[in-house]
Image (cartoon, rainbow, N blue to C red):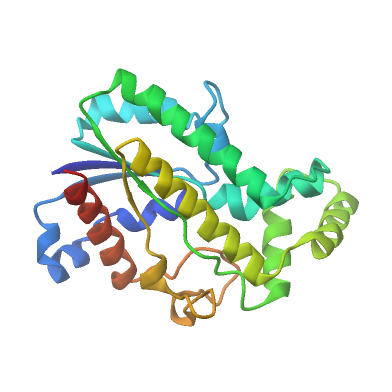
Length: 247
């Protein structure tokens, strides 16, 4: 089974390392190629031309790798960072609900365009994770403001952005509620269009508190899950299961 995964940097966990092959025997029949595009967004994927050219990269990799299946793994950057970039630097008063509905519509429509030119490939989607930026509000503000301001050279503008984000940043419950809503909407559209769907929320989070379990949260200034054998194994297991179910 050959699977091509394309998404933002959170898709890196689909890579099968030599150690993972030794520890998880059922990975040995898999060939997974991962294209983790740091900072890639659904918005960019939906454009014919974008700075990262994620769509063009996808088409080129299909020609080179000849996969049986495609997994799309975008959305985390849009929800955690893109949303606040719009609110801080564009003075956009968009709410999570409208923002997510537009994202999903764009995501699915672009995929349907892709399917027209690649009808033999089976498609599955990975939903996004809950946020690891919930244990410390200061960390959430500092990390988010740093990333969304990375192309801003004026120190005063950066300072202004950080202060504005302090006033705008939603509560932990509201932010993770948006993540779950995104997944709910995406799963529904996948069902409607005969696409596969999976996420790793239950495997990484305590849903009674709507939070990622602490042992999956990095202690450094980062919003990715801790990179462990467990995290990689569940990503790959759920990916394969979604393709099997879809059949």
